[in-house]
Amino acid sequence: MKYIHSILILFLFASTSLVAQNSAVLEAISKLKTKEFQAAKAKIDEAIKNETTSTEAKTWYYKGAIYKGLYKEHQASDPKSKYRAESVQAFYKAIELDKEEKYTENAKGSLKFLSSKYYNDAAIALQQEKFELSKQCFEEYKSIAEKLSISDDVKTKEIEYKLVLGTTFTNKYNNANEVDEKAKYLQKAKSSFEDVLKVEPKNLKANYNMGVLYYNEAVNIIKETDYDLDLFSLGEVEDNSVELFKRSLPYMETAFEVDPKNKNTIEGLAGIYDGLKEEAKFIEMQKKLEELE
Amino acid sequence: MLLGLISLFVLSGYVMEDPNSKIKAIFIYNFTKYVEWPSDYKQGDFVIEVLGSAPGLVNELTSMAKLKKAGIQTIVIKNISDVGDIANCHILYIAKDKVDAVSKASGKCKGKSTLIVTEGPGIIDKGAGISFVTASNKQKFEIHQGNIKKYNLEVSSKLLPFAEVVK
Image 1 (cartoon, each protein chain N blue to C red):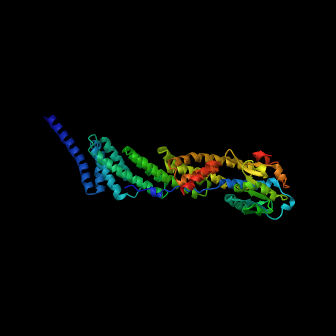
Image 2: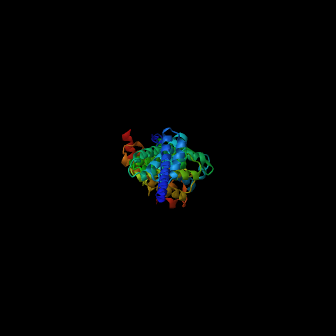
Image 3: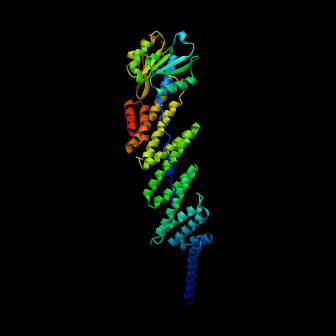
């Protein structure tokens, strides 16, 4: 009899504890509904620490929702928001635990929303020339989008982002005065356009810009040469510029192949053929330009 | 709502350049060092006349003239359109559109000390001293020592190794 009594007390204690913990989740939900996010956070953090409720998809889903609320209310303009980062991780965990798929659809919806915020922050940081921050935000966007299997969207956005990044670095390169600074931005610009070409090898803008970058490099070597350079050294300058014109050529040819009526690419090709002293091809491009006008 | 980035995108600044004219200008400046003019040509301005249409080269030579001298002489660039306009110049550059006039121009320079430079393979056989040609995507030149000496000019042997063809 005494033994049964002990079991009963133990059972009651366990049930009470479970109820208490479930009640922490319920209270968190209640506070979330009234947008009392800090109070909701205290309750859901409590539930997360509990061995039982921390294994439930529901707990993690609401943690994600509460932290998302906190992010929107307090850190919406902070690209390094910790609430947003925690919200993302909580939604991932909710999806992982949600065998019955009760929360998965909503969690994915919230993740999509948060990923769009990362993308926007990447764009804003890029406009402010905070390149490292922009890259971090973009990588967060990409990571979420890939986990959500919206690969088409990721591909489009990655191309769009890297093109803008490449163009921004190109402008920095064009405006830089120091040699080291110029070299740094040139490399970054090329790397950004190359990233686009890895995703879409026939991308018109990336091919065109790569062609222009190499063309400008080739031309600049000659432009910067002193008039009284000796002929032996001039030969070396020409070797270097010819090498760069040759590197430029396949990119511009691809751009031309993609859009044969594009005035920019025809001009670009004409310039490269002129640099390579391929007169017949240069004249052919000049004729194409005249036909367009 | 995703912010649009497309509006930020512009094609990188591409400006049609004329790198070959700069290279030719450097060659021409080197010719002023490797060719010896008679003493009476070593005073006053060093005149380079460009016959025909070569706006890129005229621009480059004009830029060069602002920065460099031929020995102690100030370099002056003149662009002329007719063989009849050829005056007493140190170098006469005959542009591609006037290559047919090389023989006539060399006749016009008879008795003067003018280095005739033009462009195209084989043109040195028509009276030019030096003619620009291209080989392996690079700017080269052909040289005709006899045509140069004919105008009382001395060409340094140091220039010859750089020539594609020496006659």
